View 1 (cartoon, rainbow, N blue to C red):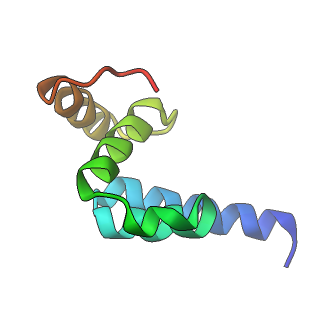
View 2: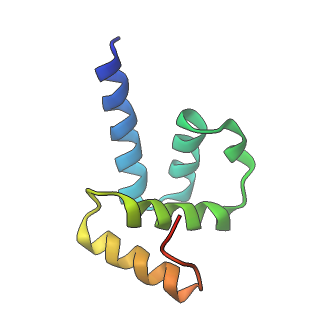
Length: 81
């Protein structure tokens, strides 16, 4: 397995989690590629992370970007990370 295969797997996993909006799928992705302690993170925190990542994801589908911008603003969060 080379570095490009690892990158492809990471991107596929990330994109599936972000597009689905499934918090548990995002939790598994983050635990594998970011921090293991995210397994115990509060669901609300992961929901905020999901929407902030989408807002700053260059290839985010426009409908998901709009959904996440409004979700963050409606819940009193800034769009900044």
